[in-house]
Length: 295
Length: 295
Image (cartoon, rainbow over all chains, first blue to last red; front, top):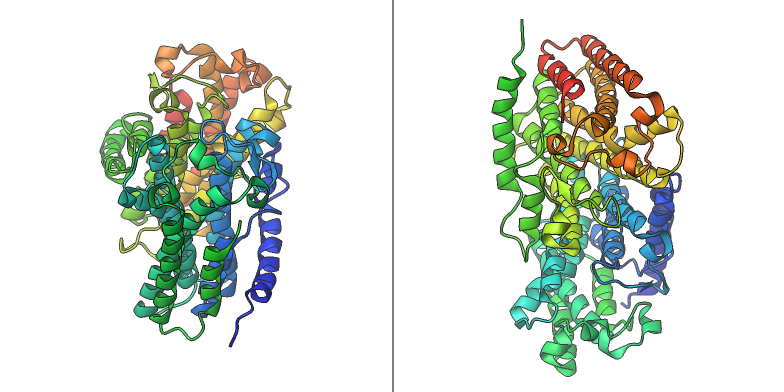
């Protein structure tokens, strides 16, 4: 039976956009709220929230918890882009086809907006009176904090920073990406799972799926940095090569990078098969999309 | 019966420093961990963790939860200082008598270290297998996220940013400080309270105490910015006046600012009296210290 990812996503994306629009506040002091909304709304493929919802549906998880978790992960992703684009980091002026936040609002407001988005992510996960079990709230905070921090995304960015102009081995490159982008993608899957009560076997399968998907995402990102143009990407293409950053393409070559991405997709597919979950079609379709996307 | 704050604090400070030294990681990628530890260890009066522990003891709260909560609040405070000192914000080079983090490690690492410290704060609050009730973990995450974000500290910083060179009314100034520094100080008290099961009356009294203490802290900060020298403060004195920032001293004058601080101390004392808690001496002594400190 074929699965229509477009139809599945459309309904979820509407809920995600609606929720983000409500939860990212407009009525904040100075330009802070404006900058936060600018960074989050009307942009992005929402891959991470879709992964959260797909995993939560696969384990029959708490729907409100999953929606909050999806938005929270997206806020962490959005804040990391705001800070990453700043002059002291990548100094990028274009993001999703728009001026970056510090270009539009100034550096100080961009810094604060990023900080406030990170706090808001955790605020969404621990609401009072939303009927989400305390155990779920605590588990979601734990997973997100670990994935965002020094042993996850922020740690990966630090390695990335230190790696400019250096040659890394494939193992080092993989470690960097596992932290920098992989941790948050894998956490998206595991946060979805934490909205329900999956068996140990299902949890392990989802963990393997999330790890393969996270790595595949980065391999494809590196491929697109070389093969796509800025207009298609919605961000500056060719940036990694220009900055002499090690990538899967510089390390493996284009063809081997492509076959590595396909291999990771097969790993992800295989892992879903071990979960014993009744319906993992959305998760599989998302992994296929990650590998076959053109932006 | 007299209360020996020095002796009380000494024992708690030892636990706090020890815990921070263990929980702020050294073994992280690149210089990230080093910068995080530089920002947090061997510095600061640890007022916020002491408030957490004092409130937790007053309500007979969970000791491990309180220690984690105290460290988490301190990490949020520390990250805010790192980001605040950066060139795009206050551009300060001296903090606690040492070069600021971006001077010592570079701007990019300072930005990431601040981000990672915020994530670590939430990680500390939601540990797996530490025997802290899920309900407590969720409540602590909620209180900290609210106090750190757009409706708390980050929001206050945004107002502060927008206020340079403008004249504020006393109400506007109070609102700015209630968010910028007051929210996190009040949250310290309420997080301590959340480690136990205080009555509604106790909770309300502690909330009022925390609000008065938070405001008093800022009034005294403004006074010290005018009356103390940089060596005593461990940071650049006279900064607010130099930047033409509105302060309680510029608004009320020095004498009225001093009497306002004393008035707030009396409010804090009165609020503790309404809690019905058996022993609030440490909380009272901390409020007295906040008002009578010289740095």
